Length: 96
Figure 1 (cartoon, rainbow, N blue to C red):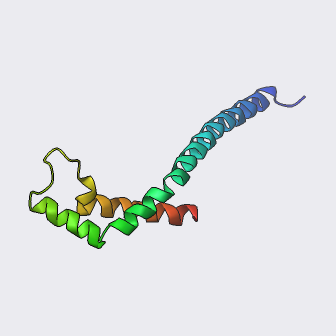
Figure 2: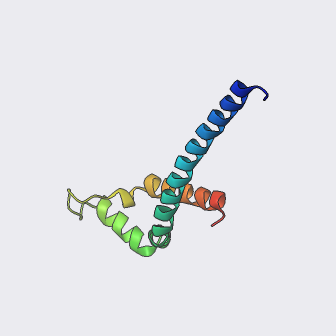
Figure 3: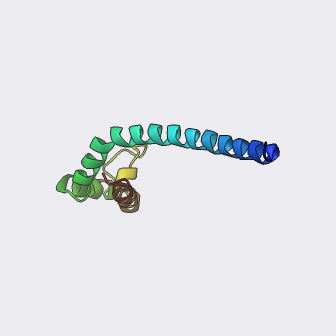
């Protein structure tokens, strides 16, 4: 009947791999669903960044013409550039 302990150990090991992989696949599926849902937002940010509208918004912010409590991360050159660069890398990685 062979080495039962070896067989049991192998089955337990494979079961752990199955469980770990199942969790990872479910998380990846959820992340990909979210990724697909923001593609329109990414396209809009790409179009806005560097456009005449963005330049005007940036200039008005620099001139103090916008409300002090207005969130303006989109006017931060580094924040939007870094985000768009990360999106590009993810698109290459996922082949989308």
